Length: 310
Image (tube, rainbow, N blue to C red):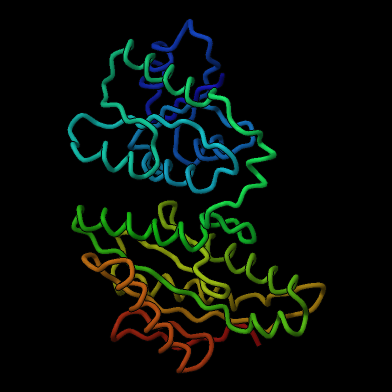
């Protein structure tokens, strides 16, 4: 059985590997969160993973949530390695999706026992993969765009708001409306509309930081979560997204499509997910009422559209 050791410190990875040496495990290593995520979402993913909280690129507890939400079949058994000085990390990690959480430094015998428990869990008799794939999946994954679905992105917003409140940091969201999508579907067919959605999500994702989150909230709406981002900054981020959408025409089957994006932003810390989404919906409505290809972020900030194509 493959076991992933995901830790940014080479000495720590070697120490964890030494604790598991001599057992019937094939050890795989990752030095940052992005490498670990690629390994854990692969079809032949390691069945048990030791994941450090402080991974670069994608923090350990965030990684747990991504694996839980986007793994196609039975997700790996993830043991989160938490620092000894942070008493709330265990609860946060388990809520995020970790199966187990261990304080570091960990005794070798305890580590071996916890990995063995993980192995017993993943090797329990289960329904066949084919049967599982045929079962209805929760609305955590949008197969069209490859990002989180409505349930997953709202759940993630709840978690990020709780984290921002704990860290006394601002958090912003952006609600993107893909304008002209209904016309594309009517005039060129659903395949053209699906291509537009995928490309819009791709362009937006390229502009985001590793810890930002994007998901499909509704048919024509995409939600972006921007931790540690204030009202002025979210306006700039959303305008960069808007410009990226307008910089190059959307196309399908050799035909250019009349598609633009308007966005509404909202910033908060103590608000609930519903309250922040309602504020973003209000600013998006204001942006759309003032014309296509607009950004409104906050109560007083509006960025006029700058057409970048003829």
